[in-house]
Length: 190
Image (cartoon, rainbow, N blue to C red; front, side, top):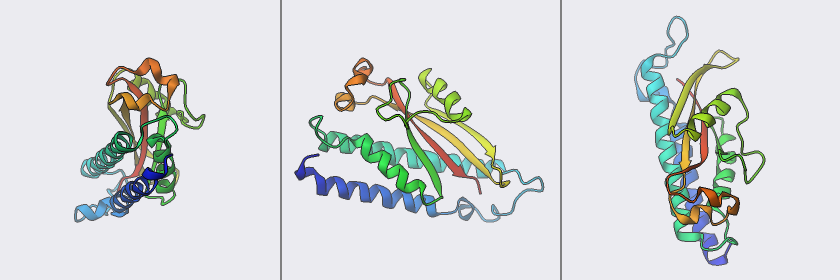
């Protein structure tokens, strides 16, 4: 990472963390009066599921725009700190809050980091769909504690040549729009 980009990159990441933490800290039930009352069978109603989907889409837009802006403005050589690496660290910190769990995944089969792969049945099936061209996959699941959460995955396509600058093993994915990754979300449905 170059020294001239360090303070600005840090400020960008702090802004992303603030926005994502703010959005994640707002209980979904606070967005609609009466939504905090569970149905008789404890299943979330359609409106609660839609609010969770909307939250995923907002977070996804913020995260992806941040990666593109950081890559465009601050990644000029393969020695610069990759925006994807910054996002992995951001996602780890955001996930510690417990309000959301988010991970960056490789879908090419050649992950930059071995942990950036699908780990459970939902992620494995969603990666297959992302590789097939899907952009958004989700599923409502009941957790062991009886709460419901939205599992969602969105695609991460190549949007500029710099996307593969730090990932020479993605050189075959140079075609703009090709999916090279995915973001996996777990959001509590309230």
